[in-house]
Length: 317
Ligand code: XMP
Image 1: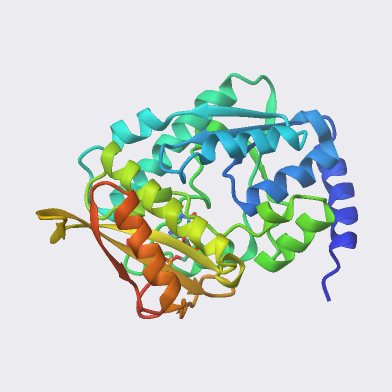
Image 2: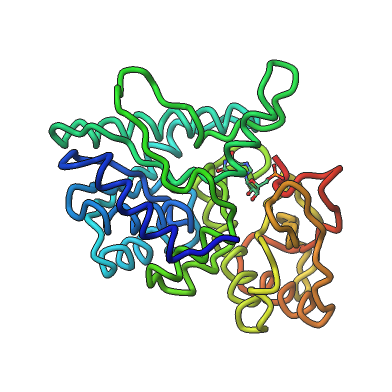
Protein backbone atom coordinates (compact mmCIF):
# COMPACT_ATOMS: atom_id res chain seq x y z
CA UNK A 1 0.00 0.00 0.00
CA UNK A 2 1.92 2.98 -1.35
CA UNK A 3 1.52 6.37 0.34
CA UNK A 4 3.17 9.22 -1.58
CA UNK A 5 3.40 11.53 1.46
CA UNK A 6 5.32 8.99 3.48
CA UNK A 7 7.55 8.20 0.50
CA UNK A 8 8.41 11.89 0.07
CA UNK A 9 9.22 12.37 3.76
CA UNK A 10 11.35 9.27 3.96
CA UNK A 11 13.14 9.85 0.67
CA UNK A 12 13.91 13.51 1.41
CA UNK A 13 15.39 12.49 4.77
CA UNK A 14 17.37 9.68 3.14
CA UNK A 15 18.70 12.00 0.41
CA UNK A 16 19.73 14.66 2.94
CA UNK A 17 21.59 12.04 4.93
CA UNK A 18 23.23 10.42 1.90
CA UNK A 19 24.17 13.60 0.01
CA UNK A 20 24.99 16.03 2.81
CA UNK A 21 26.57 19.11 1.21
CA UNK A 22 27.63 17.28 -1.97
CA UNK A 23 26.85 18.67 -5.38
CA UNK A 24 24.61 16.58 -7.62
CA UNK A 25 24.08 16.83 -11.37
CA UNK A 26 20.90 15.60 -13.07
CA UNK A 27 19.78 15.46 -16.70
CA UNK A 28 16.23 16.67 -17.15
CA UNK A 29 14.39 15.24 -20.14
CA UNK A 30 11.06 17.05 -19.96
CA UNK A 31 9.44 13.80 -18.90
CA UNK A 32 7.66 12.88 -15.71
CA UNK A 33 10.39 10.73 -14.19
CA UNK A 34 13.35 13.10 -14.36
CA UNK A 35 11.14 16.01 -13.32
CA UNK A 36 9.83 14.25 -10.22
CA UNK A 37 13.37 13.11 -9.35
CA UNK A 38 14.60 16.71 -9.69
CA UNK A 39 11.86 18.21 -7.53
CA UNK A 40 12.43 15.58 -4.87
CA UNK A 41 16.18 16.26 -4.84
CA UNK A 42 15.57 20.00 -4.89
CA UNK A 43 13.48 19.59 -1.77
CA UNK A 44 16.31 17.67 -0.09
CA UNK A 45 19.40 19.62 -1.18
CA UNK A 46 18.15 22.82 -2.87
CA UNK A 47 20.68 24.67 -5.02
CA UNK A 48 23.27 21.90 -4.68
CA UNK A 49 21.24 20.17 -7.38
CA UNK A 50 22.44 21.22 -10.85
CA UNK A 51 19.99 20.27 -13.59
CA UNK A 52 20.94 20.12 -17.25
CA UNK A 53 18.26 20.05 -19.95
CA UNK A 54 19.71 19.15 -23.35
CA UNK A 55 17.95 19.90 -26.61
CA UNK A 56 18.87 17.00 -28.89
CA UNK A 57 16.94 18.57 -31.76
CA UNK A 58 14.52 15.63 -31.64
CA UNK A 59 12.04 16.89 -29.07
CA UNK A 60 8.43 17.75 -29.81
CA UNK A 61 7.69 21.09 -31.48
CA UNK A 62 8.63 24.11 -29.28
CA UNK A 63 9.22 21.78 -26.36
CA UNK A 64 12.75 22.81 -25.47
CA UNK A 65 11.90 26.43 -24.72
CA UNK A 66 8.51 25.86 -23.12
CA UNK A 67 9.71 23.09 -20.81
CA UNK A 68 12.84 25.03 -19.88
CA UNK A 69 10.70 28.02 -18.88
CA UNK A 70 8.46 25.73 -16.89
CA UNK A 71 11.44 24.24 -15.00
CA UNK A 72 12.74 27.70 -14.17
CA UNK A 73 9.28 28.66 -12.92
CA UNK A 74 9.42 25.69 -10.55
CA UNK A 75 12.54 27.07 -8.91
CA UNK A 76 14.88 24.38 -10.23
CA UNK A 77 18.53 25.25 -10.73
CA UNK A 78 18.55 24.37 -14.44
CA UNK A 79 20.70 25.12 -17.47
CA UNK A 80 19.33 24.62 -20.98
CA UNK A 81 21.88 23.41 -23.54
CA UNK A 82 20.82 23.66 -27.16
CA UNK A 83 22.78 20.92 -28.92
CA UNK A 84 20.27 20.22 -31.71
CA UNK A 85 22.70 20.92 -34.54
CA UNK A 86 25.37 18.72 -33.00
CA UNK A 87 23.01 15.75 -32.68
CA UNK A 88 21.54 16.15 -36.16
CA UNK A 89 25.04 16.53 -37.59
CA UNK A 90 26.19 13.27 -36.01
CA UNK A 91 23.01 11.46 -37.07
CA UNK A 92 23.23 12.50 -40.72
CA UNK A 93 23.12 9.48 -43.01
CA UNK A 94 22.34 6.93 -40.28
CA UNK A 95 19.30 4.70 -40.92
CA UNK A 96 19.82 1.72 -38.63
CA UNK A 97 17.63 2.00 -35.50
CA UNK A 98 20.20 0.70 -33.03
CA UNK A 99 22.93 2.89 -34.51
CA UNK A 100 20.63 5.89 -34.10
CA UNK A 101 20.07 5.03 -30.44
CA UNK A 102 23.76 4.46 -29.81
CA UNK A 103 24.75 7.68 -31.55
CA UNK A 104 22.25 9.70 -29.54
CA UNK A 105 23.32 7.99 -26.33
CA UNK A 106 26.98 8.74 -27.06
CA UNK A 107 26.45 12.37 -28.06
CA UNK A 108 24.20 12.89 -25.06
CA UNK A 109 26.93 11.63 -22.75
CA UNK A 110 29.52 13.85 -24.49
CA UNK A 111 27.34 16.95 -24.17
CA UNK A 112 26.39 16.11 -20.61
CA UNK A 113 29.98 15.40 -19.69
CA UNK A 114 31.18 18.72 -21.19
CA UNK A 115 28.55 20.51 -19.16
CA UNK A 116 29.20 18.73 -15.90
CA UNK A 117 32.93 19.48 -16.24
CA UNK A 118 32.00 23.16 -16.12
CA UNK A 119 30.70 22.53 -12.61
CA UNK A 120 33.26 22.05 -9.89
CA UNK A 121 33.33 19.27 -7.32
CA UNK A 122 30.27 17.39 -8.44
CA UNK A 123 30.09 14.06 -6.63
CA UNK A 124 26.83 12.51 -7.76
CA UNK A 125 24.82 11.85 -10.86
CA UNK A 126 21.07 11.67 -10.20
CA UNK A 127 18.80 9.77 -12.57
CA UNK A 128 15.04 9.42 -12.89
CA UNK A 129 15.25 5.67 -13.40
CA UNK A 130 12.03 3.90 -12.37
CA UNK A 131 11.37 0.24 -11.64
CA UNK A 132 10.25 -0.86 -15.15
CA UNK A 133 13.47 0.65 -16.62
CA UNK A 134 15.50 -1.49 -14.26
CA UNK A 135 13.53 -4.63 -15.16
CA UNK A 136 13.47 -4.10 -18.91
CA UNK A 137 17.16 -3.37 -19.24
CA UNK A 138 18.01 -6.46 -17.22
CA UNK A 139 15.56 -8.70 -19.05
CA UNK A 140 16.63 -7.67 -22.56
CA UNK A 141 20.34 -7.96 -21.85
CA UNK A 142 22.59 -10.47 -23.54
CA UNK A 143 24.04 -10.48 -27.05
CA UNK A 144 21.21 -12.36 -28.74
CA UNK A 145 18.37 -11.11 -26.59
CA UNK A 146 18.76 -7.36 -26.99
CA UNK A 147 15.43 -6.05 -28.19
CA UNK A 148 16.15 -2.34 -28.00
CA UNK A 149 18.96 -0.72 -26.09
CA UNK A 150 17.40 1.78 -23.70
CA UNK A 151 20.21 4.25 -23.41
CA UNK A 152 19.12 5.82 -20.15
CA UNK A 153 20.19 2.93 -17.92
CA UNK A 154 23.77 2.08 -17.15
CA UNK A 155 25.38 3.78 -20.15
CA UNK A 156 27.70 5.86 -18.06
CA UNK A 157 31.35 6.08 -19.08
CA UNK A 158 33.95 5.39 -16.38
CA UNK A 159 35.61 8.74 -16.79
CA UNK A 160 32.62 10.49 -15.32
CA UNK A 161 33.46 8.84 -11.99
CA UNK A 162 30.28 9.95 -10.33
CA UNK A 163 28.28 8.08 -7.75
CA UNK A 164 24.73 7.36 -8.81
CA UNK A 165 21.59 8.31 -6.95
CA UNK A 166 18.20 7.10 -8.24
CA UNK A 167 15.41 8.09 -5.83
CA UNK A 168 12.59 6.60 -7.95
CA UNK A 169 14.24 3.26 -8.61
CA UNK A 170 11.63 1.25 -6.72
CA UNK A 171 8.54 3.02 -8.09
CA UNK A 172 6.09 2.29 -10.87
CA UNK A 173 4.93 5.07 -13.17
CA UNK A 174 1.60 5.67 -11.42
CA UNK A 175 3.43 5.92 -8.10
CA UNK A 176 5.84 8.46 -9.61
CA UNK A 177 2.86 10.54 -10.76
CA UNK A 178 1.34 10.39 -7.28
CA UNK A 179 4.64 11.47 -5.72
CA UNK A 180 4.78 14.32 -8.24
CA UNK A 181 1.26 15.44 -7.27
CA UNK A 182 2.21 15.41 -3.59
CA UNK A 183 5.20 17.60 -4.47
CA UNK A 184 2.86 20.11 -6.13
CA UNK A 185 4.04 19.58 -9.72
CA UNK A 186 1.68 20.88 -12.43
CA UNK A 187 -0.88 18.12 -13.24
CA UNK A 188 -0.46 18.78 -16.95
CA UNK A 189 3.24 18.00 -16.72
CA UNK A 190 2.54 14.87 -14.65
CA UNK A 191 -0.04 13.68 -17.15
CA UNK A 192 2.35 13.90 -20.09
CA UNK A 193 2.67 10.80 -22.22
CA UNK A 194 5.96 8.90 -22.05
CA UNK A 195 8.41 9.96 -24.74
CA UNK A 196 11.52 7.98 -25.71
CA UNK A 197 14.99 9.34 -24.94
CA UNK A 198 16.05 9.15 -28.62
CA UNK A 199 13.00 11.29 -29.35
CA UNK A 200 11.69 11.68 -32.87
CA UNK A 201 14.75 9.94 -34.33
CA UNK A 202 13.15 6.52 -33.85
CA UNK A 203 9.91 7.78 -35.40
CA UNK A 204 11.64 8.90 -38.58
CA UNK A 205 12.22 5.63 -40.40
CA UNK A 206 15.40 5.75 -42.45
CA UNK A 207 17.87 8.61 -42.28
CA UNK A 208 17.20 11.83 -40.40
CA UNK A 209 17.33 15.31 -41.91
CA UNK A 210 16.30 18.67 -40.42
CA UNK A 211 13.46 18.84 -42.96
CA UNK A 212 12.08 15.44 -41.86
CA UNK A 213 12.29 16.52 -38.22
CA UNK A 214 10.35 19.67 -39.09
CA UNK A 215 7.64 17.68 -40.90
CA UNK A 216 7.27 15.17 -38.08
CA UNK A 217 7.19 17.87 -35.38
CA UNK A 218 4.37 19.59 -37.24
CA UNK A 219 2.40 16.37 -37.76
CA UNK A 220 2.90 15.30 -34.15
CA UNK A 221 1.80 18.69 -32.90
CA UNK A 222 -1.47 18.61 -34.91
CA UNK A 223 -2.16 15.07 -33.61
CA UNK A 224 -1.37 15.80 -29.94
CA UNK A 225 -3.21 19.13 -29.90
CA UNK A 226 -6.16 17.37 -31.55
CA UNK A 227 -6.19 14.68 -28.85
CA UNK A 228 -6.19 17.41 -26.21
CA UNK A 229 -8.96 19.46 -27.74
CA UNK A 230 -11.16 16.38 -28.21
CA UNK A 231 -10.64 15.35 -24.56
CA UNK A 232 -8.84 12.18 -25.65
CA UNK A 233 -5.29 12.90 -24.49
CA UNK A 234 -5.75 11.60 -20.94
CA UNK A 235 -7.51 8.46 -22.19
CA UNK A 236 -4.40 7.43 -24.11
CA UNK A 237 -1.21 6.15 -22.50
CA UNK A 238 1.10 7.21 -25.30
CA UNK A 239 0.60 8.74 -28.74
CA UNK A 240 2.74 10.00 -31.54
CA UNK A 241 3.34 10.08 -35.26
CA UNK A 242 5.79 8.18 -37.43
CA UNK A 243 7.28 9.49 -40.66
CA UNK A 244 7.51 6.67 -43.20
CA UNK A 245 10.29 6.44 -45.76
CA UNK A 246 7.84 6.23 -48.66
CA UNK A 247 6.13 8.68 -50.95
CA UNK A 248 2.66 8.08 -52.27
CA UNK A 249 0.68 9.63 -55.07
CA UNK A 250 -2.07 12.06 -54.19
CA UNK A 251 -4.07 14.83 -55.79
CA UNK A 252 -4.36 18.44 -54.69
CA UNK A 253 -6.65 20.63 -56.82
CA UNK A 254 -5.74 19.65 -60.38
CA UNK A 255 -2.23 18.67 -59.47
CA UNK A 256 -0.77 15.25 -58.88
CA UNK A 257 1.34 15.14 -55.70
CA UNK A 258 4.01 12.66 -54.67
CA UNK A 259 4.65 13.17 -50.98
CA UNK A 260 5.29 11.57 -47.61
CA UNK A 261 3.08 9.15 -45.67
CA UNK A 262 2.73 9.43 -41.89
CA UNK A 263 1.36 6.87 -39.46
CA UNK A 264 -0.43 7.81 -36.26
CA UNK A 265 -0.06 5.60 -33.19
CA UNK A 266 -2.02 5.70 -29.93
CA UNK A 267 -1.84 2.95 -27.33
CA UNK A 268 -3.28 1.95 -24.00
CA UNK A 269 -0.86 0.43 -21.53
CA UNK A 270 0.10 0.47 -17.88
CA UNK A 271 3.86 0.10 -18.14
CA UNK A 272 4.76 -0.06 -21.83
CA UNK A 273 5.60 -3.77 -21.61
CA UNK A 274 2.36 -4.69 -23.36
CA UNK A 275 0.04 -2.31 -25.18
CA UNK A 276 -3.21 -2.25 -27.13
CA UNK A 277 -3.97 0.17 -29.94
CA UNK A 278 -6.67 2.65 -29.00
CA UNK A 279 -10.01 2.69 -30.81
CA UNK A 280 -9.92 6.44 -31.48
CA UNK A 281 -13.26 7.75 -32.82
CA UNK A 282 -13.53 7.75 -36.61
CA UNK A 283 -14.68 11.39 -36.55
CA UNK A 284 -11.52 12.35 -34.73
CA UNK A 285 -9.31 10.38 -37.12
CA UNK A 286 -11.05 12.00 -40.09
CA UNK A 287 -10.56 15.51 -38.69
CA UNK A 288 -6.95 15.02 -37.68
CA UNK A 289 -6.08 13.41 -41.00
CA UNK A 290 -7.55 16.38 -42.91
CA UNK A 291 -5.79 18.84 -40.63
CA UNK A 292 -2.43 17.15 -41.07
CA UNK A 293 -2.67 16.98 -44.85
CA UNK A 294 -3.92 20.57 -45.10
CA UNK A 295 -1.48 22.12 -42.66
CA UNK A 296 1.74 20.16 -43.06
CA UNK A 297 3.53 20.73 -46.30
CA UNK A 298 5.08 17.56 -47.68
CA UNK A 299 2.50 15.06 -46.39
CA UNK A 300 -0.38 13.75 -48.52
CA UNK A 301 -1.45 10.56 -46.72
CA UNK A 302 -2.18 9.53 -43.12
CA UNK A 303 -2.60 5.96 -41.87
CA UNK A 304 -3.48 4.61 -38.40
CA UNK A 305 -1.47 1.85 -36.74
CA UNK A 306 -3.77 -0.97 -35.51
CA UNK A 307 -1.06 -3.26 -34.08
CA UNK A 308 -0.75 -4.24 -30.45
CA UNK A 309 2.35 -5.13 -28.40
CA UNK A 310 3.26 -7.95 -28.64
CA UNK A 311 3.92 -8.79 -31.41
CA UNK A 312 4.49 -5.19 -32.52
CA UNK A 313 6.33 -2.74 -30.27
CA UNK A 314 5.05 0.74 -29.41
CA UNK A 315 7.79 2.51 -31.37
CA UNK A 316 8.43 1.42 -34.95
CA UNK A 317 12.19 1.25 -34.44
P1 XMP B 1 8.71 -0.27 -27.30
O1 XMP B 1 8.88 0.38 -28.63
O2 XMP B 1 9.90 -1.07 -26.88
O3 XMP B 1 8.59 0.92 -26.26
O4 XMP B 1 7.42 -1.05 -27.19
C1 XMP B 1 8.21 0.76 -24.91
C2 XMP B 1 8.31 2.13 -24.24
O5 XMP B 1 9.68 2.52 -24.16
C3 XMP B 1 9.88 3.72 -24.90
N1 XMP B 1 11.17 3.57 -25.59
C4 XMP B 1 12.31 4.14 -25.19
N2 XMP B 1 12.57 4.98 -24.16
N3 XMP B 1 14.85 5.05 -24.80
C5 XMP B 1 13.84 5.44 -23.99
O6 XMP B 1 14.08 6.23 -23.09
C6 XMP B 1 14.67 4.22 -25.85
O7 XMP B 1 15.61 3.89 -26.58
C7 XMP B 1 13.33 3.75 -26.05
N4 XMP B 1 12.77 2.90 -26.97
C8 XMP B 1 11.46 2.82 -26.65
C9 XMP B 1 8.71 3.84 -25.83
O8 XMP B 1 8.46 5.20 -26.21
C10 XMP B 1 7.60 3.24 -25.01
O9 XMP B 1 7.09 4.16 -24.07
